[in-house]
Length: 197
Image 1 (cartoon, rainbow, N blue to C red):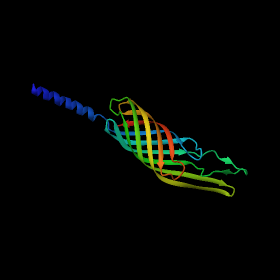
Image 2 (spheres, one colour):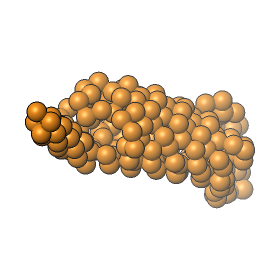
Image 3 (cartoon, rainbow, N blue to C red):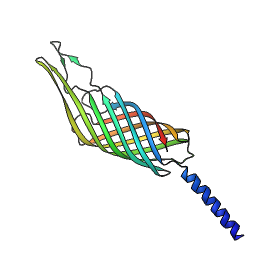
Image 4 (cartoon, one colour):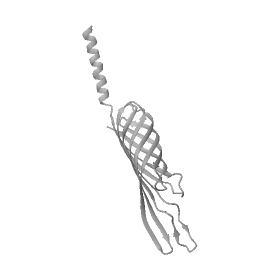
């Protein structure tokens, strides 16, 4: 009887170990969507944002890793002055490159189909704002750069299509500190695909 119990225990342990080994713990995702600058002195046009993440699931509720985001927003439409010359004030394109560590909380169990989650990230945001000032005596072109501390806050909803592929939608808010140039707070809504292996 004791031998039978030991055999059953070993069998259950093997089944558990096998199921755990098939649970993919490394994640790679790519996404893209709409980006909007907030609280700016000028009304930038809505732009785009693309990015990706690589992370490791160290618990069925937590993924941590590194994320990269690139966003671009065009300046407002130029205004004509009295002599029909176009004038911008720091009127160029605003570009941001963010590299951050993140932690993601949600239901990442292997059998989960619908995956709501919350994400927080912290790292560096590099801003580049092009200048294109057209004056009566000619044009002045250049760029300004600012390296800031960046924070990301996002919520998302994923739907597992097959065992290792999930599609998701992710609204995100980004704030950068301290302020160096005007383009520092943004909101984006992106759709993406996450692959686990």
